Length: 213
Image (tube, rainbow, N blue to C red; front, side, top):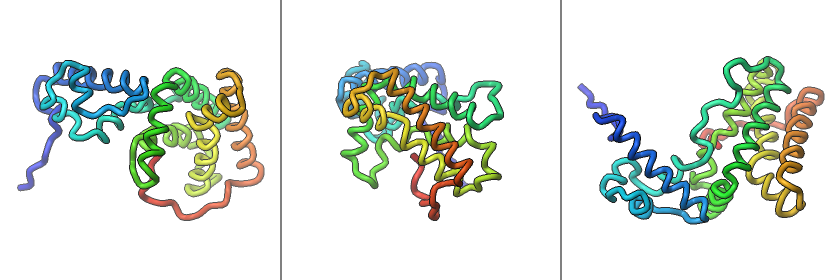
């Protein structure tokens, strides 16, 4: 009979282990907010937790930073009773997403820098975010109309216009205030959706299975 391996956190003392994990993530996020790329050992020291214990939760820096990504806490941005109108659903997601990006901007900027340093084949840490899933959920009512591939490319187009990358350009290069930058991102998202509905989805190509964003 096959033996199923269970993660360390699944074995006993769940409340205590949850608190320990949370303390490690708080410490990691605080360091990320200061522009530091914390190792597991540095995070353990900052959280006053033994290095051996910390490695039981996060076996390497990659796992730690992925878990510390600001977007990993939320599973949906549509709420309990979402509209069925795709434009309204998209605007709700974009408003919630951009508010979160602004609220966690320091961490987001560090994660963006680390992702760029990690290279295109890395996996750290921007690709651990959930924006693609949130936008896809918002536009799910259009799946039959656009098709799976078409919907995916519309989502990618919208994601390219919202998020930390767009915020950095709009504030640092275009010199907009953050509220104005958020409004531009909302407007861009709706414009891309309208274009997809009136002119069709962007040109499509087979999806690469190794991408999650």
